[in-house]
Amino acid sequence: MTNAAHVSLLTELSRLDVGQCTFAAPLAEYCTWRIGGPADLLVEPQNIAQIQRLRRFASEHALPLVTIGQGSNLLFSDAGVRGIVLRLGQRFARLAIKEDRITAEAGVWIPGLARKAQQAGLTGLEHIVGIPGTVGGLVLMNGGSHRQCIGDLVERVTLVTPDGETQELSATACDFSYRHSALQESGGVVVRVDLLCPRGDRRAIRQVMLADLRERRGKFPLHTPNCGSVFLSSAAMHASVGPPGRIIEERGLKGRRVGGAEVSLQHANFIVNRGGATAEDVLTLITAIRAEVRNAIGFELDCEVRYVSPEGEIGPAHRACPRP
Ligand SMILES: Cc1cc2nc3c(=O)[nH]c(=O)nc-3n(C[C@H](O)[C@H](O)[C@H](O)COP(=O)(O)OP(=O)(O)OC[C@H]3O[C@@H](n4cnc5c(N)ncnc54)[C@H](O)[C@@H]3O)c2cc1C
Image 1 (cartoon, protein in one colour):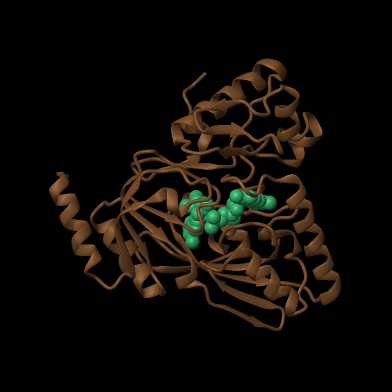
Image 2 (cartoon, rainbow, N blue to C red; image 1 turned 60 degrees about the vertical axis):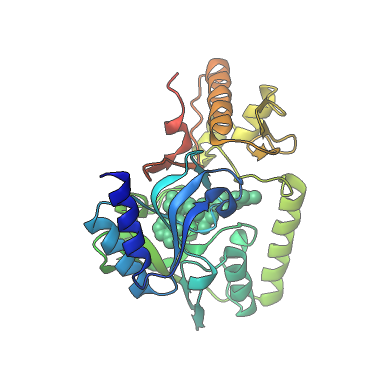
């Protein structure tokens, strides 16, 4: 497709009822690492009909489409995205609680969901109170902490498929495992999640949440742009070689820097943007860390953070690193 045809399609799309459209949106402003070039078109819908229309248009015209929430687990290319970025946030963030069921739209802010559950006397979401993303990203990543994952409480996920149809998936069909769900391969847009939470004691739930937030403030470099844990840290890995932060720290890599990207002095599984870091800087640093760990203990560190290519492909960031 010529550039003129591409621009004309995106212009046509922006005139449909799909939500708020921004051309040449700087992706650095839409992620917590503050890294990334422009997206040709960023669209922020506020209802499912708009998401269906957008998804159908992108499929019919073979336009790359990337769905994002808060961008707290993403590394965007320095070249940005040559297509559409569909962002689900505050405009798509309704939440309802009925007895033990919470129904949340994908753009709901995770700490807000945890607090609403606490106020309703529902337990099980204490471990997500400090995760700075949206419900859609959390469910797709099967995120969580303290060895718990959101998938443990999911009853049902509603998706918009690449054909623009809505589809409901049970927790079994989502096939949740550590930081993985079948949703990652589906190409669908998560629009709504139903969670079933047991009843608990409001005050006790609050105490657990406050303790989690205190622990995070002490452990993580929360005041410098970052993307959370860069490398995966599963229970199996802890048992065999230990957590990635400790492995990286033991190699003396804290403070190692490439351009504006630096291994955090506070927590070695975090890479912070010291100012002006590029995606290239981060990928080069990830490559160096993996090589040092491989050479020292023969273990291959895989990334939890996901890289978004200019063509709109998304996958674990180590797959975008040069091969050893
Ligand atoms: C300081 C800090 C601490 C963190 N701590 C934790 C932690 O303790 N545990 C943890 O699990 N994570 C943690 N993270 C990582 C991140 O916050 C989570 O993965 C979060 O759930 C991502 O949500 P998001 O909305 O930012 O998703 P994004 O980063 O925008 O996207 C992540 C993935 O989900 C996809 N996606 C997003 N929304 C949708 C949707 N609606 N439909 C389909 N696909 C979608 C994207 O395409 C991408 O593949 C942390 C990050 C930071 C910066």
